[in-house]
Length: 331
Image (cartoon, rainbow, N blue to C red; front, side, top):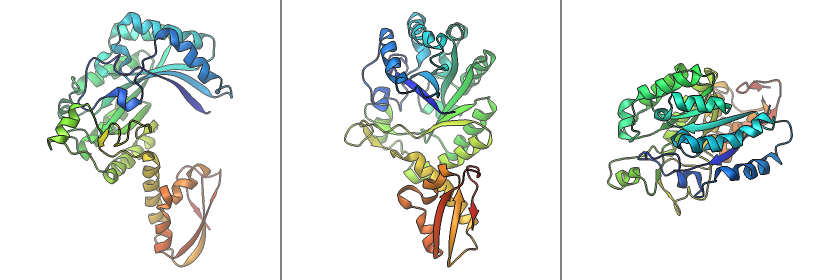
């Protein structure tokens, strides 16, 4: 079933703690914060285009929702809960920090039907968390995860790659921890240097170097495949494209690309093609793949065509609904 979120961004309002990489108003591309009484008009506008039987959730994103005073949280949740009670949406999700989860918060979220909580874990390495100014250690992630699952609420754990003091091995451990902590969904974000952040100051002083784009894509590819193999839903890879995320506006440095996921999928299929076509040369072939993968087989901007050219292969690609995501049939 198709799934859609009705996103309600609340940048900065809910997050008095400022991590060194964060300027949420810039990252979300939104400066205005909707008030609780504006929620119905936002939701109704979205629902007008979502009446095709898809699964719909109201999603409070952009800050740390549970950092808002409890009475204000309740005002937002009450508006969303009306739609849940009326059967117009299927769930309510929100994103927050691990150290902003406690018994009172969990009780409130359960009362208003919250179905998924995404924690910005970012990393489970204490050195990386300290260097990134997260303000908590990895035990806060573990404790919050347990509380959410004990409340029968779905758990999402987001990660960031390329944070200060991060390494491939440390990010690899974060992937393993996200899986073992019981998350059923995740997001993979590359760390970017945004104007107005502490990370920007470190970068300008030469004390931080972001991942380059090929490296970030390679890391994301490896972690994406591990999450898939473990049965997690990967909700997003890379940041949403926005006018703010340009060098003319707020982006200073880092592996940003408007088609980051497509670059990653191109690499996944390059590996599959190089392995599968290892013995083939100088012939015409037809490749059948799941229809959702056809564009990725060709690759972003046709990048994977060079694999066929180097082997002097004339290739046709067509969709076959009977094939699984990474299955390839050659005739």
